[in-house]
Each structure stands twice: as C-alpha cells, then as structure tokens.
Image 1 (cartoon, rainbow, N blue to C red):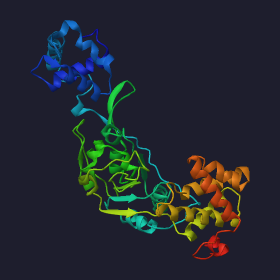
Image 2 (image 1 turned 60 degrees about the vertical axis):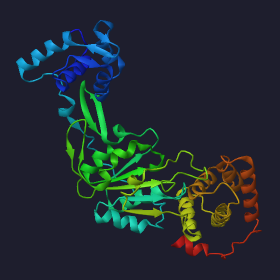
Image 3 (image 1 turned 180 degrees about the vertical axis):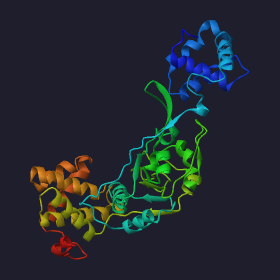
Length: 383
C-alpha cells in the first residue's frame, strides 16, 4: 500500500468505501472511480497488474484492500481524502458583470429581455436567428443595463456534464469537486447564457431539471444546489433546434423536444431595420473614428439588397450586421471603401464575392436606389 502513489491510494480507498464487501473488481469499475477523481491510466494501472488478474477484465485486490479496511475500521476516521459522496466542493467566487458598450443600439427584443432580467423570475428564454445579428450582444447589454451578474457558457459538440456542472480537480495537492458555471450561476442568482446551444449533443440533457427551476442533485458529491432568486437561463442559437436544412449551419444539431419544451418563450431575432442598422454602423464609425455618413448609408443599402435576395433564394450567403461592423473597423485601418469590403467578404467563394463586390460598386455609384426611399442620415445618427 505504501508503495503506491497517492492518487492510486485514493482510488483504492474509494473502492474500499464504495464496495465494502468486495475484493474483486471489474476493470470498468476501477476506471470509473479514477475518472471521477480526474485521474488517468497511469493512476489506476498499478491496480491492474497481471499478478492481480483472476480472469479477463477482473482483478483481485484483496492483498491491498483488506489491510486498508482494517486501518479504516481501527481509526474510524479515514485520513485520506473523502469518498466522492463526501468530497469537498469549491466554486470560483469571482463575480462577472457585463460592461456597457457605447456602440450598442437597443432594438428588437432588447426591451423584452431587459424586462425578463429585471423581473428576477426564473423564465428560460430561447433566442434564435442568423449568425451576426446581435443575439448574444443583446443579452449581454441587457444584463449590463440592469447590473445583473452574467455568466456566458460557449456550447460546442464536446460540452458535457463535467463542463457545465463541474468535476473533480486536483488543487494544491488535494482532490476537490470544482463547481461548474451552471451551479455557480444558480447559487449566485445570475443570468446563465448558453451560447450557440444548437451546437450541443444530448450531453446537455443534464440540464433538464435545471431548466425547470428546481434544485439539482450533484451526483458526484451528493450535494443539493438550490437556485437563488434571480437565477435564469437564456439560450441563443442559429436554428430553432430542428437542425439546419439548408446546410448553412452544418454543426447545428437537432435538440430533444423535451429539452426545448422547458423554455418558456422563444424569440426569433431578425436583422435590424435600415434605420436601426444605420445607427449601429454610425456608432461603430464613431468608435473607430472614421465617420463617413455616405459610406454608412451605402453599406446598409448594399446589405439590405443582399438579404432580400438571400430570402428569395437568389444567393447562398448573407451580409450580417456583424460583417458590416467588421467592414467599418477595416475601413478605419485602410481608409479605402473597396479594400475594406474586399477583405471582409473574402471568406465567401469567388463567385459570391465577385457578385457582392459588383453590387456594391453599383450602389456606390448611385445606380441602385432603395425602393422604400431614402432615410435622413442626420436624423438617424442623432437618434
């Protein structure tokens, strides 16, 4: 026993506690305990030596575990770290608040999101919309306006229970259960933003009970975490959880209906109107000190024409509000309209890029006039 390293001893002690009447263990049971403590093969391999094997996949650890049990009984208190069910839990106590961004322009569902945040109610909200139309930014700025703690979790296909609820970590030589962002948001009464939730797999089903606003049992420690007042979950996605039929968002998954049903409301975020988008572009030009009202108007008109064509299935790509802001930033560096646009749409295939550049050249030459009529740029900017 004393020849085993500390991590291996911890695994052995947990096996002795969890299976008090056993001396023979299957490989998967040993590995499962090791993984719960955040260990790897080098930590449990010493227990699965050839001399200990009694049959394929089964190991007799009587020579190691019986002396250990005698020590545990005689001392009545185990001096080694506690079992998983008694493991100490810790949480990062640092609070995170979104900062007010002067380039943000309130529009769309922003006032509704502010009301939801202000209400302090548990009111799960699902926001969907095309990439780059300000979904995440809107939630962030709503929390900044209200002064609400805001915890953002970026979801991807690898996100699992360990990432969300927490797991065992080795800290200062001791194995402890470190609570994840979901438990932290629950305890702090914060807004939990699950960003790009349609990139997740069924591993996020661990959030089912949490989306009902109920206490959650942390299986690895036995602790029950109660949601504090003000805790809420807001999710953003490019799809409505049914996948992407047009292939634009190939990583988007189909979300289980039982999971989606737990969201109280769904918000469908569209691109802003011409007036609002001009305000956004003006704000960014002001931010980067490159104010050009004529360029801003033409950028917004150009993007609007492309979107209408996109919705009519005339093109496969779209110019997002975020893309317009990138063009403004690039324009502030190179001070050339055509170069700024060229650099910012180079991610598109060559045919699409050329078509977009050709369209902009016509807009810039005033060959295309928006059917809805011109909008007073000065009034738009002053607002």
